[in-house]
Length: 198
Length: 198
Image (tube, rainbow over all chains, first blue to last red):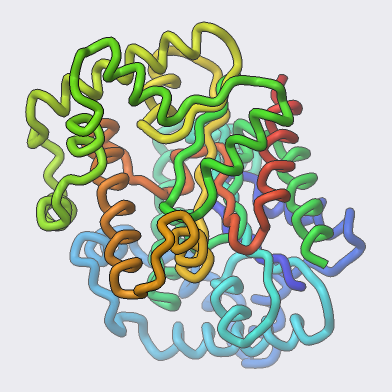
């Protein structure tokens, strides 16, 4: 069984995923996926990161308002997504693991893998404290802008490649508020659900 | 701390809530709220149930499409909601309990209570099996109609009285897929989260 973690920016999804992987003694894949994509495609890392994460907020807002789900992504973006998909499937075939982000929940389920799909989120205050720490950023306006941009980007990416609504509880097996429950409790619950499903 | 449970029709939210209340030795409130509303208001039980649960699908579809959140409910419905709100608050003041549905998550949070807000959902197959059993109904078309109607009604009710999107993970502390996790695992996780928060 593969654990996938989707997460709001600053909600601690990566830290929680890492602790889950440690507790279960299994692999975790996140930025490594990007790196391997780059290595196997010859594209520059900067390009991949830019295409993936930093589409303009204006474009995202327009997409959300118009609910347009057609092919607005360019060929490079689609190519990167296809490469990442192949790499995620390759990793999953190796055995149980944790995969962070990148629509892994839908990719793996469609490919017939047993998955435990988790969504991690928190209120703005918790996310802001964490994002401020990660980016060493104290300016609230800048921080709010960064958080909104990251979340809008993840939401648009997920919607574009899966046709589903990011953050709708019904896409996941388990959706946890890391702000109110605490990281350790989230880790415990995911490990518990994983062990129970074996 | 009060546990509130919102749930899709057929996802077993009531059964899970009941087991949670038993495990923790605390009260559970669901249909009792309706009954007490009726008793203290003098309204007929049939009327309350009708007003609450069975608004026409056409009306709900219109409301969802237009995203209109204005005062479309009539005075009787608003009165019933206000009565239920007062009764939920009265119950909550007595001590820890489980409250099923009726926007209790938002009502109690706004009143300053500590809450653990849970959403229980499941895929259509699990919900259909459960709903079929509850209603002794074998006709798939009828069953699908009933499930859609119940869910549309709950969604519209929640949106009307809270302004929030029913089923969006971010409204809850914990959102659990009872179909994939199983009822017992859901009970365990809610009890766990409750004990951890004390």
